[in-house]
Image (cartoon, rainbow, N blue to C red; front, side, top):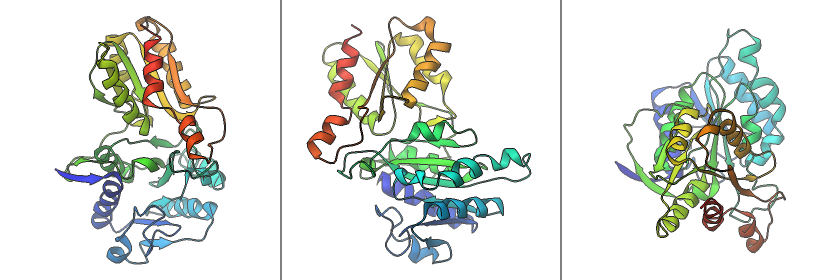
Length: 323
């Protein structure tokens, strides 16, 4: 086991697959000699050279479109956008091409491509660089959506993402880039659709994604001091989603709070709520509660931004409403 930051874990997963397969390549804005906007690809240009670690024009449509064409013709591209917000610029290539081509061609081509998208608030990057748009991505048939919360999950899930024959959206919360944890560099890829119980509990299930997993764990410790034992369930992939794992936890606790950083309106938290309503209603002792960001653009002011982002205290308050 080796202690890595999430940034290092992502880099090492890319390095591993690029060393093993010459068809794997990375491209995006400033991913080359500069090492990426957040430093994730630092050193990769020196090892793999400009043919396999390529800087692109400032055009998200070009970046994603290039990934689509490269994947369709036999390569395994990893495309990095600086911020998930800019996926809106490349949405045609992502939504109307990448997500649909394998289906429309009757499976005669594969599209083994990964689009890495930094997302989330917390660094005062303001409204156009801080959104959590995972629900948009998960809404599109043909895209797989991955959202790790720890370095080990990031490493194992990125290996699986690069290996997959379909387009994969790989979400990276910017605030978690520096988070450290133990990673087994010889671990097998983590299969999609398999969630992880980050903390065992018997009284309430907290379903959380990304950075909110850490807020949920902090909330669980506070609740434990008051005699409430919370189970923290991290789905890890939004599509495919581990419905069975969630329902197993809910059957044990009979109460559930969902914590995500998205705007509450139209959030993926609402999709999880619907899954519970359709398939787990009989397990519930009370209503499903959601803890999400406010329905406003992300503020630039650090004080307002912290008010906007859900916190461990917000989760604690939601859980206490059930007791």
